[in-house]
Image (cartoon, rainbow, N blue to C red; front, side, top):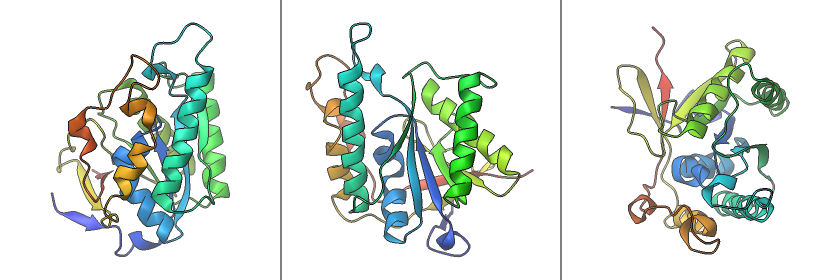
Length: 226
């Protein structure tokens, strides 16, 4: 699949909002996009869909420490990707692995909130996990992004990035490639997510070693109009 360049017209003037299902997805799937748009003053913001509480087993009502840890890790990762502390991530705080469905009040509330945010921050495009990703939260994030696009009535573009899935079919999607990141920056950002890489919070999710080898660029995918 031949990829368009994010540095070329008309993409180099676009303002981006990144929507990540969980803390660490921003680095794995959109780290280079965040770095490039922050450098060019085109990063409108970073939004996390869930509270990240599903990565480890916790007693009922006792997930607060894990949630706080993952929010702190997310802020550190964003700082390492952008090189500054001017922006703080926004957290929608959906319960991890229990996404709201279309037309649920929580889904509609989130769509309204993001629509208002996009207008206020003059967002041109949302980058979100691909709709065919094999995780319910990743799929829900894509549904939410497209719901916001629909509310914008054509004034907003949605581009998908992959974390766990394969690239979509080039017959249905166009590719858009970011500039390469500075050497080691994405690895440093991922290291901020210590809860996902070590036993610091006991038994739970561990990012596979093979997934920690990340490319220097991101590829985004745009649905073709038929």
